[in-house]
Image (cartoon, rainbow, N blue to C red):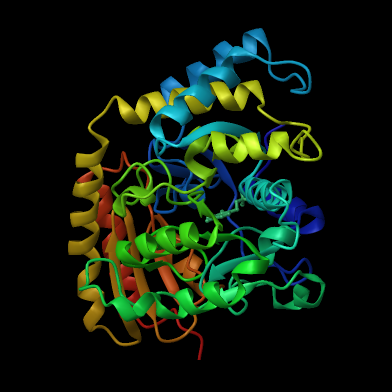
Length: 433
Ligand SMILES: *Cc1c(COP(=O)(O)O)cnc(C)c1O
């Protein structure tokens, strides 16, 4: 039964809780009726150019014929079976493909059902690996400030203590080590002192650290910060020196977003454990994967338990795996790198004028990610409304207005998206007084 936009909103208010939102004093939400290409069609008929790719996911845009077909074909044979004791072609094919396209040493694939779970899996792998080597005291993690790794308890414990949105839970979270956020930006001249705090912290505590976990090159939801690849090369070398594993969380950066297929490639390094999610299925459904090396997988498997102790109910969901393979095929068969270069220059040209505006602290662009950082927090009630009024979908966060549009966005729509951001920033209406 078709409902009017007002009916949907009323029903939403009554029973639905939205992410990071109050239930009783809920911020505005906009009912979406359908989505196609780079456009979200609202229930009231308005069409918005999508600047968010539904939180990094919808890299090919919405309602893509190839991904739709992959879902239909898979649906006709099997939508889901348990993964304990069974296997299937969609999982095997996707695992092989991921092992092929990620940095060479990563050859073992563990499927999970969301990014946060992939991070939990990575942390458990690292702890189980150290225990298998007789180093059970190595249970802590080292990370860098400004990071975001998800909302579950283990993932929360390595999110930035300030911007990570989880300070309320601090007392129940395990305590880990936090090094300063890298200060040398991507594209700036490298300064070797930038990695010194990390080096000191790791050297001081290596005996109780199982792994370093970080987002390579681009820190996402914890502050949208782009740092120098040399920092990552230093981290890799220091992890090797101290027998500590390196976990790269590429849940946001994976599948081309930063201009390389995986952000680790900017530094030419391979992590010991890699987390993927978000764009893995092209935004069609939830799926994540934690990849590791044969050395780590063999050590865990030869250890006391003889098995890795994790297994989600919806592990390797066939519909999601088939869609993910189709999404990877679709990405790699097109000149995606040239596309990202074009988006990068479009975002740069479109957002750079914001730098001179009132309340703007910084403008930065890398790959298909554009960020305008303000001096004050964005008004989270008015800002979305102002963007919707300009027929674009942009969801600011804290002091950040940022976009990571679907790769298929054309020049005109990208220009409209950037113009809306300039307009909203210039009007000065977005910052709370
Ligand atoms: C989104 C994100 C996660 C969490 O993924 P969910 O699917 O939301 O659980 C973890 N790490 C990074 C870097 C992310 O961007």
